[in-house]
Every structure is written in structure tokens, then in C-alpha cells.
Image (cartoon, rainbow, N blue to C red; front, side):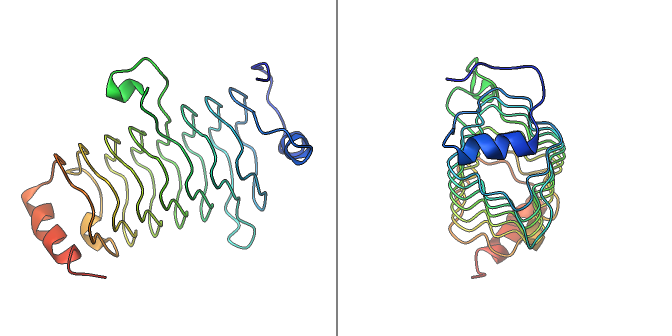
Length: 203
């Protein structure tokens, strides 16, 4: 495993090392990088600091498919339209589950339109995150913190919300679909119960 460093690494150096075959970038300081248009599928960014990272260009979106982001700090990250299919952001050792491992934080992150289908988001902190129009089909959100997260027009069918407190989620009733979503032990307001019954009828 590469040695953890405290000095920031530039996007250019990161991509150069990735293209040379390196995949393990755990624990690095990657704050504020612009990854628009970069394909970093399969990269290991476990425990990395990606706060305020940037990827907004819808024509040149970042590809982080099958990426390990467990324990990474993504507070304030802009990953609009990014592709994160099958990415691992959560994990069984998260402190939210009573473990002593770091939790992935995406507080205030912009994930509008992001592709998070089948992503592992277990026990991830998504407070105040913008998930508008995000693709969360089949995503695992067990135990995640979604307080004040915006799910307007998000596709959350077959997503797993086991043990999630959804009472403070914004625009849950405006989600595209919640067909076959798992809500075991999830906390819902009375209004949300009514809204979800309608959402389950949508395709």
C-alpha cells in the first residue's frame, strides 16, 4: 500500500499515476480537485480527503465506477452527474454501526444526477446532500444519515433504507419511484407513510 501523505496531490498527478496502473490512493489529500471527464474506475480512495472535490460538467462527468471510497471525506464535494455505479462508500466497520472505523461523509455534497445504482452507501453521512434526480436504483443505504437530504426526482426503487431515519428527508414524496424499496425499521412521518403508498404505485 502507498504511504499516506499529508501534502495535497494535483488532479494531473493523480490521473498520471492512475494511467500508469496505480490504483491504491488510500488516505491521500485530494481536496478541491477537478475530476471532470476523468475515468478512475476501480480506484481505491479509502480514507482519502476529497472535500470540495469538483465534477460538474455533464458532458465530461467523472467516472468512479466500482471505486472504494470507504471512510473518505467528501464533505461539500460537487459530483453532479458523476458515475458511481457499484461504488463502495459504506462499510461494516463504520462508526455509525458501532465499529471504530471511519465513516464516509458526504455532508452538503452535490450529487445531483449522479449514477449511484447498486452503490454501497451503508452508514454513510449524507446530511444536507443534494440527491436531486440521482439514480439510486438498488443502492444499499442501510443505517445512512439522510437528514435534510434532497431526494426530489431521485429514482430510489429497490433501494435499501433499512434502519434509516427518513423523517427529515426533503422531497421524499417527489421521488420518481420507490417501487420495491426496503424500509425495514425505517422511521417515517405520518405524511411520508401516505406519500410512500403512492410512490409504490409508480413505475
